[in-house]
Every structure is written in C-alpha cells, then in structure tokens.
Length: 550
Image (cartoon, rainbow, N blue to C red):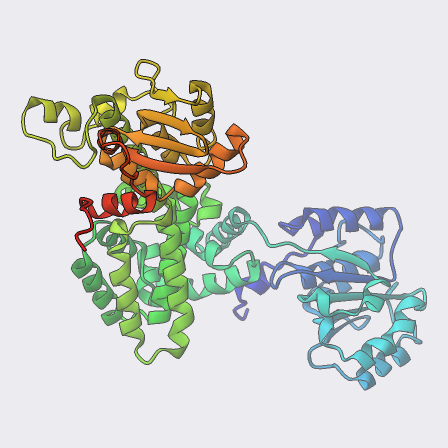
C-alpha cells in the first residue's frame, strides 16, 4: 500500500472522531437524529480544524442506507468514496479555482437531475468566499429553494467575505482552533501508530507551532519524523530545522539579565554560524519573551506558555520585572518588523541584543515616578526636621554623632524622617507660629488648602514662624532663608489661598526671614520699609541692600 501522509491517514471518519468542535458535532448529530436537515450549511473557521472533514461526515450521515444516521454509517459501499471525495453524488468543488458565473450555472443545471444511487445529491464547495459576486448572485435562488434532494455545504476560512445574502440562507457553524493539549494527544497517538517514540516536550513544541490547526500539526509531525530516526526529541528538531533552541535562548537571556553583552553577542554569533536565520532568531526570541511575560503575569499552564515554566532558569524568570519584559518584547517585535528593510540584518540583531543586555539598569517610567515621589518625601521630611531644630536646610552638616543621628547610615532610612509626623503639612502644636492680626485657625486653614494637591507648599507654610496681617498686607516669616527662598516662587498661590480664606478683596503677601523682619523693626523712625520686590531680589542673590550713594 502506498504511503499516506498523517493528515490523510488520520482524517476523522465519524463525528465522534472529531476533536475540538464539540458544539458543532453535537448540533449536527441532534439535527440529523431529529430529522431537521437544512438545505444549506456554512462551515467557517481557521484552516486545518475539520471543516471539510465535517462536510464529508455529514454527507455520509445523510446518505447512509439505514439513515440518515448521526453515527456516520461506515459499513456501506459509498462510505469510502465519500471519505476520499470521489463519490458520484457528493460533488466537491474548489471555490478558489471555480470562481466564475459559468461554473455556478453548471451547478444550477445539474441540480435539476436527481442523485444516481444516493438519497441526497450534496455539493461541498470549499473556500466559497473566493467566488465572484456574479457567481454568488447566480447561486442565490438555487440556495434558497433547491430541490428536496439537494444539500449545499459551504466551507470558508474568511466568513466576512461571504455576502450576507448567502449567509442568511445557510445554517452557520463556526469552527474553533483546537486546544494544544488535544493536538498533543493526537500527535502522541500518531507516533504510536508509526511505532516511534517521542519526548513530551518535542510533541508539545509541534503542537504549539501548529497554532490550533491539527492538519498543520500532522504536516510538521511528518517532517520531523523523517529525520528523527525513530525518536523525536527537541534538541534534534532545533538542530535540523535551524531553530535557536531553548538551551541557547536560556543562555542568551541569562547573559542579558546579568548585563553581560559580550557573552550575549557571542551566543548570537554561534547561532548564526550554525545556520539560524536572523528572522528565525527574532521569531524564537519573541516567542521566548512572550513566555516570560505570561509567567510574570502569574500564568503557569503549559498549554498557554508553550512549554513548562521550570524549563526557564530561575535567574531569568526573576531577573526582570514586567515593565522591562514588556519593553524587551516591544524591542524584539520592532526588530522583526525592521528586518524587512534592513541593509544589514545581523547588525540590527546585534544592536537589539546589546540593548537587551543593558535593560536591567534601565529606569522605567514607573521607577522614575517612584524615585521622584521618594525625593519629594525626603525633601518634605528634611524640611520638617530643620524647621523643628531652627536650622537652614542648606546648612552643611558637621561631622560627629549629631550628624550621624540625622543622616543615618548609608542605605538606611533617615531617623529624622522616621520621627516626622504622619502629615508634615500640620503645624506643630508644640511650637505654634507667632500670629498677629490673624488667628491660628485661619493660618491652619490656609495651610490646609495645599494638603491634597501641593503637599510641598503646605509643608513649607507649616514651617513659618510668624504670620502678621497688617491692613492689606500679610507677612509670612521663616527662621531660615531656605523656607523663604523655597516659598517665594509660590507667592501668588499663597496669596490666592489667603484671599479666599480671609474673605478679602485685595492682599499683598510678603515672604521674609525673621532676621530681616527684626532688622526692619530696628530701623530709625521715618526710614522707608524695604520694597517686597527688592527684598526678594536680595534673597535670591543672597546680597545686601546698600544706600544709594548718587
């Protein structure tokens, strides 16, 4: 007997032998058993999932001498002819090569004749979406009101290209991709039939590469069986097909995670020298990174990952967080897209691998946000510490135990920050500021306006040691120049908050140090007060005001 490919040899012959299409099988069997047989069926779905096989099984069931029978009725003369597509009353037509309206007119003429020796004359039209619009229009009337002995079965991989007028006249069945576990079981059975042994991971790789198509899985299975010498193993498959291989991928990603670009690029050179194509390299690496991404999301099912999670080293699985893995995926996918227009594919690949090897030190946007927030909290805590101790924040810290107590050991939390109250924007009840012309409650209300949106301004205002309201002027004084200088840029915001809280129409806010306030109070009577703008310039440039000598 001549050799048959696995896809043909193991084509399902009954509804019960079909896998992955439970809904379709159950519906067809129930309709046949109950006698509710439609005049037109439309099977749609991906390639290699059983559409044509289901059409032939349905044809056998309808023409079974003891039927129609939902069991497929194998033991009769025409069963083998229908299974091989050679039956006289079951006509299979390739829609891709019979697209014209003349081909459809021939069908219209043929349906007028009853079947030769079967119950139904059945037309199976594969890839029906390839028919022209004129051909579809010519079919409309025939499909809608065919003779009682005619049944149409259409199959297509692109249901959206079939006109709605055709779809509305057919019972539609959507075939699904077959789960990887079921494909793997069918491959194991095929290996047993051939008397060969197969490693579990080798069968899993073939099933994963088939991407839900059982026919594709059988085709790839036949290819790897041809060079495996009776035993399927993953290492042989990778070597013979010019694939990157899991062992090499693990070594490459381990070097990348540990920021060892030289080792990573050496692995790239070895792979290319062994015959791995650059495009294949990018595809295998992208699939590997996809697995890492799924593992980082907590997925452990082999059917989803395409391999067992424990086959990836622990240092690789825990080497990068999810944002870095996502960045690596984007980098490799972009590499694959760019290879088509590359002037030097190897250089593009090496550049991408070099970038992967520096990814561990890359600061992601999320990490930068956390760093900025930590710096803000540190500034607020540091400012609160100096406020309580009457020091300037930019004052250098002297060596000794006091400095050590404030700064702490490297890598440890700042003790001063740990002692700070939970809400640094609150005014210290033990050291309330001096208030004149304004109540402490009003001061606290002004500070409270900045707590939710601008915590740094609230923290600075809480450090102020003097609040003095004189007429339409509000003086806010600090014990050091740090607070006065830091708050000067937010003068307008403070002014608006004070206006709203005090219910005034006009208000000028002056921000000074206690030293400048005391100096102004010591001036002789009749001397003019310092202009707020001049005082702000003095503080910014840390200068002194001298008398005009002109």
